[in-house]
Length: 107
Image (cartoon, rainbow, N blue to C red):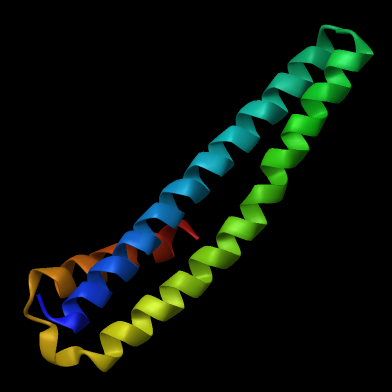
């Protein structure tokens, strides 16, 4: 495998992983918000509510960080693909292009 294809494969994997992480953090944030609201509605112990809110805040804090890292990874992969247009017939290039489309749509 050429060095360019290896680079495309690695950068595609990074984008794939970060897109997956972003989805996971968004789902976790949503679940924690629902959990906190449910606890408030049922008038749970204030300490438990505060603890659940801190967990929710941690999850919420991860979303912008992951979004930023994903933007950087998308930019990096895009520039790598632009530099290696001669490889556009390869499976790795096609997979990278497809991953870029998917990752851009979830941002």
